[in-house]
Image (cartoon, rainbow, N blue to C red; front, top):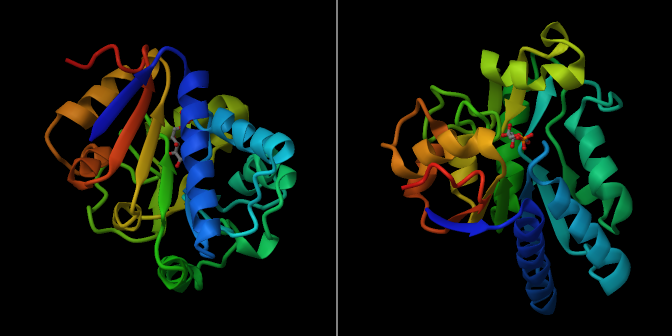
Length: 248
Ligand code: F6R
């Protein structure tokens, strides 16, 4: 894992948006799709804001972009303000020229009977597009990437998972109480993420400093699933000074 520290999250986010934009443009000159793996949560908001700005002011087009989101709560209605479907449209998709058919977000409404096959098909679809060219990640205090909580297997695929209590606590304020936070989610697997050609993880703020340290400097363990990124040859952590303060 290579890490780059910026004075502020704004500067780090702009740098990441520029990398994504330049990848999209390179693929356009080659007449190819650009397959992006996307994250929700607070960490990538400024990256999406900058991509929207580049679309509106600099003519960046998303016509060749295919997206796969990492995760969605389960069960969860698309129309709910708590859904990652809602989040992605609010922060990115409603403001750019992506073809709606090219957007993939795990569905929080598949039936229990269909769930297993649905997850297998999600990974298959990524493969059919030639794999993820770029995967954007945040990191949870449990060391989760996507919703791969402690105990996740390094080779796991997209599947349903039980959320860790700490993850549900962190989500509680926006759900107005932990009892309203779903107990489950659908998430891309560690194996799904690790097949991406390029991975960029964002972490901002003091409350991420200790998990960032464990992830970069600790032993590889399923107890901190993000440590599996140490085995990936092209991963960069983009940090602000606060998130990097515990690194040796
Ligand atoms: C979101 C996701 C999660 C978040 C992580 C950090 O799609 O997969 O792993 O990236 O929980 O969340 P924030 O950015 O809100 O601190």
